[in-house]
Amino acid sequence: MKFMRIIFLNCNYLPEAEAMISPFDRGFLFADAVYEVVSVMRGKLVDFAGHIARLERSLGALGIKGAPDAGTWLNFCRELVTRNDLDEGMIYWQVTRGNPGDRSFFFPPETTPPTVFAFTQSLALADNPAALTGIKVATLPDLRWGRADIKTTQLLYASMMKMEAKARGCDDAWLLRDGFITEGTSQNAHIVTDKGVLVTHQLDRKILHGITRKAMLDLTGGLVSAIEERPFTVAEAQGAAEAFVSAATALILPVVEIDGVRVGAGAPGPVTMQLRQAYIDWAIANSI
Ligand code: PDD
Image (cartoon, rainbow, N blue to C red; front, top):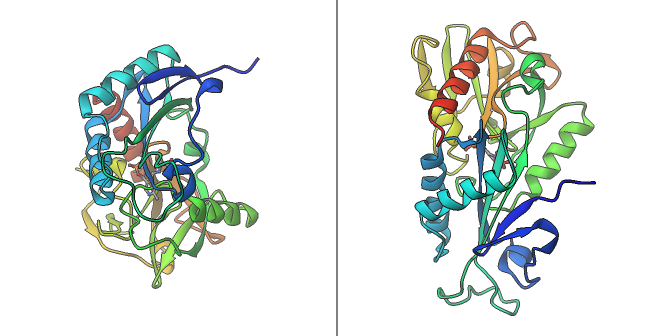
């Protein structure tokens, strides 16, 4: 029988089959919602402070009010981990603008309570087999809206591009805007040049400000010669010594092929793999 999760919905812990959300919820009708994905290692939340800060930034950017405070989130996340006996995987958080009771493009009054939802999902993070083989990416146009820095649930385009990448025999897509790679469909994208320079898109409205990216950049000491925060082209990435992605669910994963062209030796690179290990050690040490 399938394991029945206990989810969190509007202050209640419920078996997943009993969770009910109104079809008039703004999250359902307008994707008027923000979310976070927090990794869990050894039963603890990784970089909780970073994810809370970004959630609050996303909520502030959209003017969604009334979400729980950091202490409340931490309590119910820990409760979900315990109730679902989660050792390794993720916790997903979503906050929508709530249920105005009708469909209207105008936002409901700010007093409308937000819908707050969270669930756990078990995943192999440290022992992900893709870390040993690396992943292949296809480059595809970045036709997302201009506020990729807000972590909204409007993920249809990212999902379509993942499917297109799969149809091309790849594991994922890197998105291209004005001739430069912005990021992956659900990860930040990085390269290491043959001079050991780590190049990663600067933090602006074109990319999600990755929490894993931030921690990873702080762990590069001794592993890279410099960090350049700027966009890079497909040709530069294909000619790089190494390429990799970062995300809560991927941690750090090597990219070995871009549009059918091998990156470096076509195998996970040494800087990437050392950064991956450094990140895993850091994540375990900084989980609560
Ligand atoms: N995605 N860029 C995009 C578009 C993302 O969706 C994500 C995360 C990232 C990496 O951010 P972080 O390091 O904070 O996880 C970058 C999550 C994992 C998801 O949607 O499942």
